[in-house]
Image (cartoon, rainbow, N blue to C red; front, top):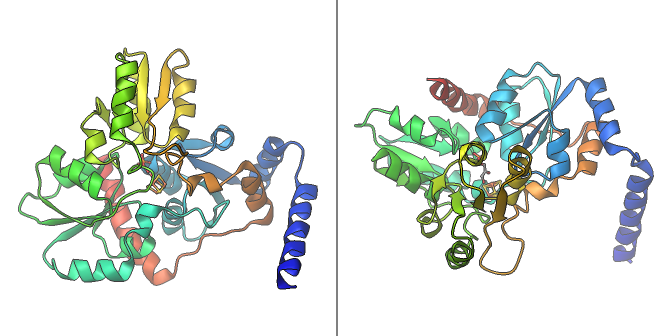
Length: 329
Ligand code: 13P
Ligand code: SF4
């Protein structure tokens, strides 16, 4: 009985959604954007349709910088929860919308606030540098935030006698250690998407495409990074393929970025790095929860809205501002 009521409610919701859906979603979103004085910020891992309608597409750093600078009244964040939360922390008086509130991040989930507080307490003299892929509660426990594009630069600005905890991504942490020559105490977190790439299958691809270069995000596991000709954030990978004189690339990050790579260099070939099993596990299941239709609905209904409790917001703001200052340095 209960199941039938649920099924009826669901089919009612679906038919209401269908009836409500405008035939021209792109036009309807553009109209709502105008009415709300909204800006649409999208990460490179979003579906191509969403990237095509966004005002700005970027990596986590670029998106934070845009969120900090915007004079729009409403920020529509086509990305995952921690990114929209960062925009809200920077803009407490603006309405920040996320098309699907369930769009989380496995890496952020791998660092629960209580466990991290306990970990941090074991290293009282350490500075905490946290990757932006973490919750507001973790940011509130951090001294400086970083992204994949500025992590090395930020750690290099910290005096060498200052011990550092780096959280939550152990792979980015190891990469920063290698690049900066600094010892870091690492939180043992990782991303389900970037740990899925298969070293064996990448090597097989290299054999079939001997002229292709492997380009990888630093969240990948060390065996994959060892095969990389170039390692960088999504924005850095995009610039690299544009500038390189190579014609083909094996791309070891979420394949959403390939949409912009194809637009920027249509004559070049981009091969998504495969995962260990024959699944689409290289697509971020959280990012892909957002759809063009949900983007339209969140603007139409002005919900789901991101909120951050004020005490956490104030403590989380300081390390984000330090990142923005140190990135400009
Ligand atoms: P970027 O810093 O390249 O945006 O990385 C974000 C991310 O979620 C990688 O998984
Ligand atoms: Fe999080 Fe990984 Fe998805 Fe990036 S790709 S949002 S780190 S789960």
